[in-house]
Image (cartoon, rainbow over all chains, first blue to last red; front, side, top):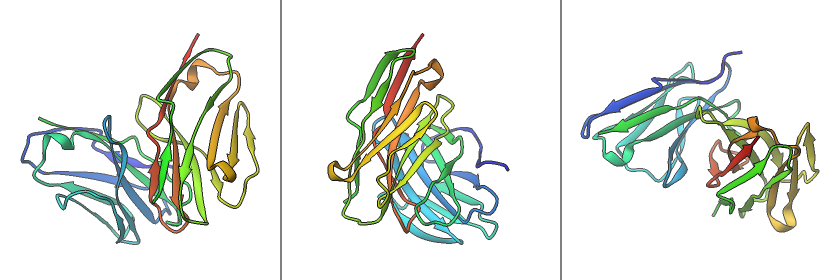
Length: 113
Length: 114
């Protein structure tokens, strides 16, 4: 059974640009959540999608957005990139969206220069 | 408010030593889940265990064991006879039982030296 796939693995962007990250969850999983990991702030929740609906959103500015498609694949978008957006972005796949174990992808390492 | 505290930032042990990673949590929920994840240098968070708030039975899996105590809001993780491959950052996490939203501790970096 394939795991969680995140693409791309690495990205380098310039301040002011926008970026789209992709996550394909485990087959049959309906919930996808996103996390930002930085050395200073640790792992922080961005948002969660379940059956194409955003159910929860973390404390991030509106520049961070996401969506989920009917096949459960998810994308997150960051517009007007800032240096502080440099981080590892992790996607987590969960079967039923009920807070049980989530399985993570290897992440997308975003560097903003 | 939900909060997870891992007071140990970094621990170094010599191979074959036992090591315990501490985790203390705060929540007002009566039903919740607790987790441990391992993050090797590759970056992926690897699921190790989940405990339900109503199940305080301790668990052992090979060299790994977990001690859950609601009275002290703690969920500690012990590695017996540590190995170099155990070197990683370990995260304790808490979730509400209805949402796929995790609150992570700051992580404990474990260095196991040969």
